[in-house]
Image (cartoon, rainbow, N blue to C red; front, side, top):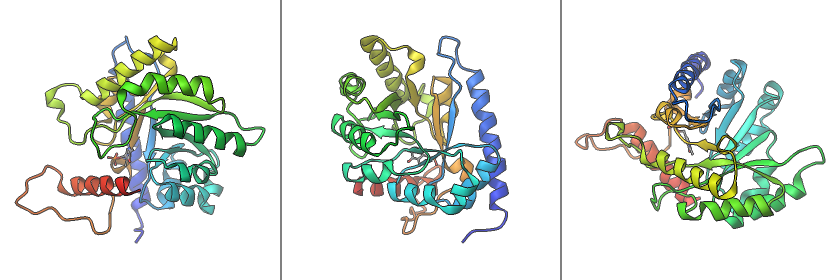
Length: 282
Ligand SMILES: *Cc1c(COP(=O)(O)O)cnc(C)c1O
């Protein structure tokens, strides 16, 4: 199951990604807000040992996309003991009936996937009930479906301003931190800047202009293993990187693509397909 030596690999891969993040940030045009990008290490399907190893190397921000897996990992005794300052990001689809469970997660730092007014209200009322006197507002991002694909969750882009306005005025327990998108998989950067990232940038422009918010107060969560450098160059402040740090994910029963079907990275494609299927099922 868990091979000796894997954890050292994690440390090296993490350092390489951190370096690439910093180099990409240095290439940003000066017109963009100077916000150091945050690297969220996406540990889904990976064992607690890998999280602990990355934490030992100084990493603090981790992401999970299933509520149950996040609950298990965040409550894991070894993680609780070795990683007291861990900051968990929830980056998966959230259903209302799972909100209480999610908000009970120890060291929950941010929920990146609020995608409706109703869900915002539910997260707000639950946090009001669950938070202790010492805890502050809960950081949330609003997830936008920039690609308009049915398989993707997220708010229709046209509803961004009204939703953010609602959160700012009605959800006192929430801190609106920014906008998040997943976007279309496999976009070829040879065709120009990723249109999903451009769409998120223009929604931020719109939100900031309409609601009089400074640009640097509204984060952008965009960019994954294949495109995090480009995402940072165009203004991402929060990249979510999984497989480049922790290695490819194994999914049981992942359909093996037929050899005649040419694809650049068949296993990863199949895993992404699997992810889409499971995400839609949830
Ligand atoms: C899995 C996942 C990622 C990380 O994907 P990689 O391609 O492995 O970097 C990022 N964001 C979300 C929402 C995910 O579910």
